Length: 405
Ligand SMILES: Nc1ncnc2c1ncn2[C@@H]1O[C@H](COP(=O)(O)OP(=O)(O)O)[C@@H](O)[C@H]1O
Ligand SMILES: O=C(OP(=O)(O)O)[C@H](O)COP(=O)(O)O
Image (tube, rainbow, N blue to C red; front, side, top):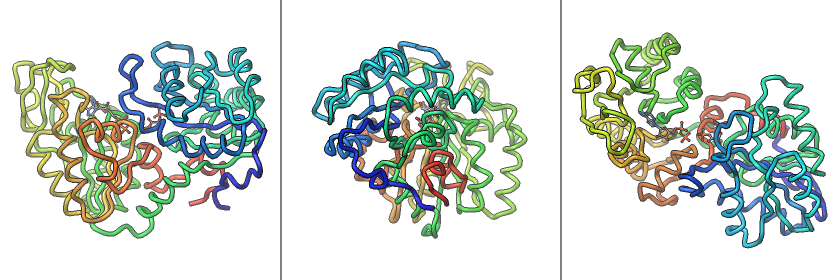
């Protein structure tokens, strides 16, 4: 079976259509610092509005703990969505309660409502299938059809991604379709050399993909928060840097596997060590075997790759014909730790072939650092989702829409 797309749903005029978007944007207080994911959701929403559907948008934001938490409210996103659509967006203060019901009941053909953060409800991310299903049933009661368009979340078996799609006539939106078209080019005979660059802070999520990615690539470059688990696996001390101590043995296995396969697994040679996490931290560049050799000793933490590593990684990237990059090389949000990410982004713009940047923060990083979207082959809205797609994993949010890899 192939992916069900919007036409599979027939005419949606006058119907209540629930659209699962990934509007998980970076925020500073209530200010959206990168609206890329909101923009990416517009084509599908416009297609539904133009058909005269009553559009009910749902999304998560961040990782709240299954209960309302004002700092993860989607209210600022409703405002931006309204500006980009050029029409009012009714914001419901809850997800499946009276507020949501009133918002849905008030919709006329072509109107749009956004419900509050799905993850304010424990059922959304519950491990127990029955709990997820019970929450999905409450959501399903609002709609006549379901459109899944949150590509960034298709790797999650969560109520609004998986169970909801089973409860209503469902199909993928145009963002998911567009993402898959590009990612297919990376999985089917990518032009070689093929390099993958990994970084970011969702270390435990992303370490898991490496085993399956290794046989598919020519080189794998490791920066960002995950590099420290690799350094620890090589017996080096990493101070107070991000570390997944329970993954060290797994990572040792990856180092051995890379050698066996002849894949270049490039690790940093130097890092920027900071006195603390903050823009006003003191910081110095240190070789990777001297991270604790600063005034701050074990308290020092690595917040960026160093200049020698940035140059090394840039050479790998520029020499590749296909490059996929997920995860900033450092804490790019703080100016003293943005140089590694900027260097790698610059190298991606110089690739003579296909360059793809994936991930909410990675996309935000390249834009914040002054690059334009058209300097890259593609900017994907999903980091973890595209990585799991590239490793060949079956993604629940796609399978439930009929997709088979
Ligand atoms: N050395 C590091 N220590 C702590 N956080 C880091 C480090 N390097 C990068 N990060 C953080 O990683 C975050 C992005 O990670 P992640 O969510 O995995 O990326 P994406 O959203 O692109 O998939 C950024 O907020 C960045 O500050
Ligand atoms: O930001 C996201 O993914 P990404 O950081 O891998 O790009 C998605 O919104 C998924 O969020 P989650 O990783 O909290 O499930």
